[in-house]
Image (cartoon, rainbow, N blue to C red; front, side, top):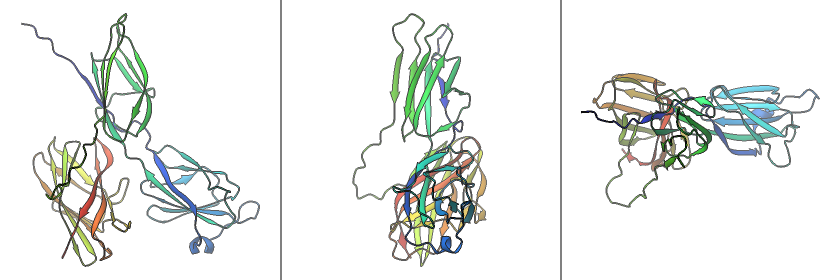
Length: 339
């Protein structure tokens, strides 16, 4: 007896498109002794304007405009000395789309330092369910063939082709949540193509006296915060990480890309001084082979924390896996127990 099976063409999009960052702040600084002590003249022998940039991701940030002096004084902190006549600033970094912004109103002033804050835009996963299985799928004219690919929020041109069926050529909008698009292709001559678009909507959070559960899952790996404790000026966050998919290597990021960081309730940003993952210890990236179904302990140690902090308002856990590239798991409003 013959059976007909519904064939679903499933694509999860990861890494085919350039990453993006956004400017969250651009203003003059009333005083910056570093820039004043290291002032630079432009080709007209006039003082340059200094742009101090703090950025959480790009490891090799630069400007498209002529830079008379560039300094990388700390991780993610740069100084660029440019002509005060520049009307726009274009930020560039490997694997990122260039970002061009106007200078603050009134233009740059000679010898003045300006502060700019860049933040990466987190990628999301889109899933295309297409019936019957198509011959060709492209987004922004890039062929889709990988099983797991991530994409930044925004608008894209989607094209779907199959012999004997009406092609699809339309603009899709990708939001901040993982998005699903379901398509049923119509044979040539049919009146329409049935298209169903679904984007997960966050359910309202119900107030409860029960303790919050800090557990997230991505790419078949579950990350759960089991405790957060402060010892004098040190915070230790304990996690349980379990791989529920195929055996694979998992890296917690401390040095590069989407590096792990946290923010306290005063808005201060901290990076871990030490990582423990299974039986390994490091002060930067740390990798282990995770076996399916084996819960594995990890801990993040942050130092020089203000004793007045009551909770962690945001924890970005940086992760890298071969099938997903770098990404962050974000936990919010984590209470801490003071010892």
